[in-house]
Amino acid sequence: MCILKFSAMLCIAFFIGSGIATDIHDKVIASSFVKQYYQTFDENRSHLAMLYRENSQLHFEGTVHTGREEISQKLKSLPFNKVQHTVSTVDAQPMITSQAVVLAVTGQLKADDDLPHYFSETFILLQENGSNSWVISNQIFRLYLHNH
Amino acid sequence: MCNTKFSAVLCMAFFIGSGIATDINEQAEVVASSLVTQYYQTFDENRSHLAMLYRENSQLHFEGTVHTGREEISQKLKSLPFNKVQHTVSTVDAQPMITSQAVVLAVTGQLKADDDLPHYFSETFILLQENGSNSWVISNQIFRLYLHNH
Image (cartoon, rainbow over all chains, first blue to last red; front, side, top):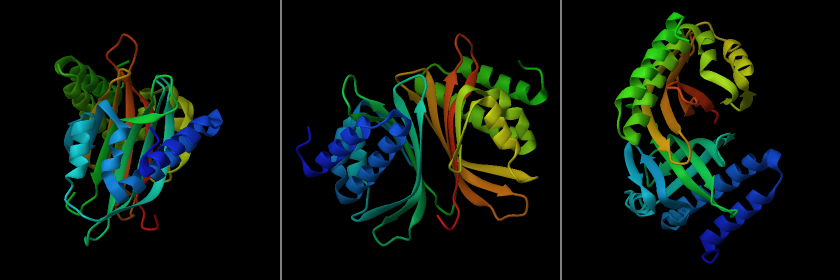
């Protein structure tokens, strides 16, 4: 599971993140996750596929995509060559009713030669049954454009 | 529960919302859009009336500070240092959560407080349906303002 370079980094981040004390548990998970997610996205977003499962849902600028295949396809088909996410804030909270973490990210995104735009992204991370790895159960992405 | 004016409007929105949609995704959208309309209207008119939406375990992140439970959250919202405030919502995206009877929703828009310039904001809510009833409460909430020094 931790074979490829990028997925190895993600794996390591998740395993380290999952092992630490419960008080800062979610903060550590969240910040490891966010760092690796956007680094992978910016370098080679096809490597994000492993984070999604059959029931994962992604809202991307209003369109909905369900499951690893569709989500990978959507991310791969985004029409830019270069992209850079700059994260400003990450806020994380555990969910009481399930072994899940909700996290909200704000920052800026620059694609190709466009001007940077603010973005907002929400993730729900779930811990896979009996393992230390976290997957993305829900994800919502929005860009702030001047005509919003 | 539906006594005061604002909570009556909120109640009706929720009950109507819960009764109509058949599909889980549709239901999430209906619940989300009812909540968002009523939440920001109530916030902008009289935010002390939001208290009823929170429970003992509710958590609010407000610009980086954490508040847990109805008392603390109400206190935080009441103590926000503006007289007038207006939220203008641009987008609302909602998804059902598979593992629990919950809805996650993400809102973007602009916020104008007193005579300040408007700023973009981002707000995430997790809504839970209360046991055996049709009413939805806020379990998790995260608010961020986009300021130019971010």
